[in-house]
Length: 278
Image (cartoon, rainbow, N blue to C red; front, side):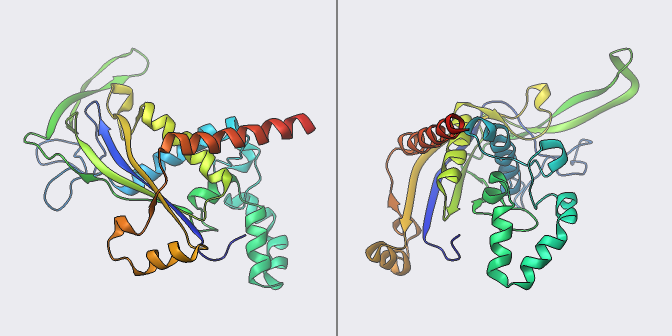
């Protein structure tokens, strides 16, 4: 277990929406019942929390294919023991408090040993995340970016529109693009394989936001660069500490597909070896 920053990866790219999409503001818009989230200038906002939440759910779905564990924050449902699940933690609290009395390093080792692979990467109530996701920065503002659509409430028994329950909602135009970055601190081989699998999934296309069953929110991730730094290397450490231009602090790691394919293949090989020895 590493208690200091030794390695860092950064993936930069664009999220490009192929259809209209919406991330709701939780309140009415200027001219409709359901508004979209806007920044102070009135432009659509793509919050890092929404990106990270979707990325986490993607990793949770892909983890079993890599023989990695995802507790889904519910150990009883997932059958994966994890201290991030409040009910599981409560049942094992005496064991945790014993480790706590033995000192902070014993406490941290207990948390590390009892946390699933997804929670190690994305964080949980008991540990900090290794992965950070930036807010999206809109790169192509255009006129008439936000439009209003009509919706109706369906009667689940008759499968027809419920009388008098019409509403309208805002959507953001297809073609909008946001610059995003993902920063991963002290990545383990498991972290890199899991994140890499999710990046391949998003590059092929996925959905984000609300009303995806109505065809909204289809996007693809276009990765521009994969960069990193090894702070155990004196030259890289010095450059990282002294460089004032952010893009010069990290080194280019080449093609992202090749890099993460290698990590995924190694994890699959390890999984196959473990299965063969079982």
